[in-house]
Length: 351
Ligand code: 5GP
Ligand code: MN
Image (cartoon, rainbow, N blue to C red; front, top):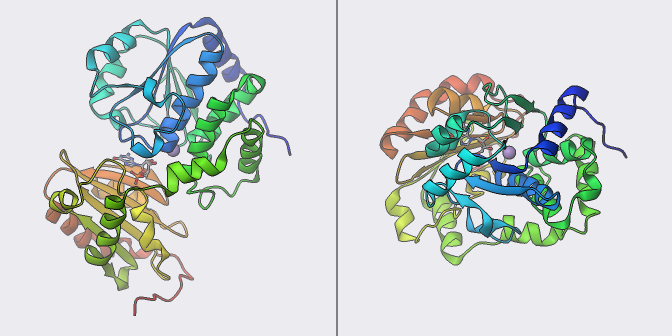
C-alpha cells in the first residue's frame, strides 16, 4: 500500500526551498512535551543533521524520563535550564520548525522568545484551529500524530531514502504514544502504511513500547494504584470518573515528572464510563488531563472550563487556583455535558 501525497504542491515546494537554503535550523514543540512532541522534533533533528544542517531541538521544559532512550535526547536544549543559550540560538537560526502545537501559549515561558524569533517559521501540527503562527502552515487535525504528519512531509519531499534509524525511531515513538499503542486515532489504514515504512528502517518497536509506554518506577506504580484506590470518584449519572492528586499525595510517593503518564486512561477501562478527568496539583498550576471514548468531546470541557483544548477524545488544560476549586468547577458544570453522552454506552459496571 502506498502513501498518498496529500499536500499542495506549492507548499511542499516552499518547504523544500526553505530546507535547502537554510543551514541553521531549530525545531521546537509544546511545554510538558510528550512522545509525539519530542518524537517529531527529534525525527526532524536527525534527518536534517544527516543533510549537513546545524540543528538544535529546543524544549520549553524538561521531557519525561520515559523518553530518555531516544537518540539525541541529551542534545536537546531546555529553556528552563539554559535560557540565554536558547535565546541566542533563536536569534541566530535561519529557520524554525514548530511541531505538535496550535497556539503560541502552549509553549509557556518559551512563547515570547519564539514569537520574537526573526527566522521564517513552519508549523507541523495535528490540532484543530491553529493560530496563524507561522508563514508556512501544515495543519492536519485528522492525522494520528505530528510524527505521522512529519513522516508524510519527509516522504513528499523525497527524503525517505535519507531517513536514518534514529529519525525513524523518534517518529515511530510519537506514532505509538499519541495512538496509545495503536488503540485510538488510528482508523486511517494509511497510518499503518506509515508504520510499515518506519519499520523498514529497522526500528526496534518492542523497545519503544517498553520504554515509552510500559516502563515505570516502583514509586510511580504505587502512586497510580493509590490514585485509583483512594482518589478516584465515580459520578454514575454523568458517566464520569474523576481523579485528583494533591501536592501532598505526590510528595508521599516521591513524584517525578511523567510518573502519572497514562493514569487518566485507566478509568476508561470501567465499562460504561464515557470520560475520565485527572487533576494534578503541580507547583505552578492544577494540570487537567482528560480522555474519553465514543467521541465524547472532552476538548470542549477543557476549553470551556480549564483554559485548554486538544483533541475530541484526549485533551488537557490548566487551572490557576486550588485543587478543591478546580474539582468544584468540574462538579458544578458536569451536568451540562450529559447532552454529549454517547448513545449505546454500555451499562455502568461499578458494583
Ligand atoms: P495530556 O492529557 O496528555 O496532557 O494532553 C492530551 C492532549 O491535550 C495533548 O496532546 C494536547 O493536544 C492537549 N493539551 C494538553 N494540555 C493542554 C493545555 O494546557 N492546553 C491546550 N490547549 N491543550 C492541551
Ligand atoms: Mn500530538
